[in-house]
Amino acid sequence: MNHSALFDILFLGKSLQVKNENFTLSEIHILSYLSCLLSIYSGDSSKEWGYIFTKTEYGYPFSNEIKQAVDSLIRDKLLDSDGSHINVTKDGVFFNDKFLNFNFYSKRIKYLEASINCLSLTPFGVIRSALFSDPVLTSAKSKSKSLLLEDNNYSTNLLFEQFKDLKSAINNEYESLVIPALTWMSGNLKHQIG
Figure 1 (cartoon, rainbow, N blue to C red):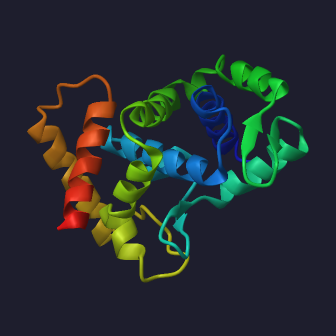
Figure 2 (cartoon, helix red, strand yellow):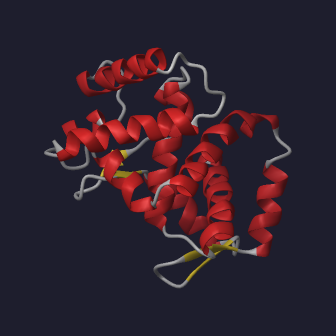
């Protein structure tokens, strides 16, 4: 089982529960992908994220590692699901709190928290639409099950250029990743509208 996916699911799920009482698998995929993008914005390679994303038939990011980890966490009673909504159980919260003690995950937390904090300022549907317009997902729309964020791919290189331009435009002066994330997503939505 992918330990990074396990951590991300429990961390995001616990945070989403505070805001919404429960969450969906789709929300975990989208917010994990946004977190991965924020790590790339900060200079990390997509390979450093720990798991990969493909595009669904609907054009959204999907990680098989996340899906497998959710299934495992449900079997182990760390998550509970009614078929459409998911909750982190008390045991899941305890397990997540134990994860927080490992230094290995400390770098991920700032990306995951920034994704969650974006939800405080913009609805989930807007985040989903903005990500749907990112250059990587846009180029993969016509290809079923396309691997996303591949190195030396034209669309991934375009994403790097967007992030470089964004850093330059905001003088890279924000400690929080929420402002760059929302600014980038706003630009994607403007391109989508025309």
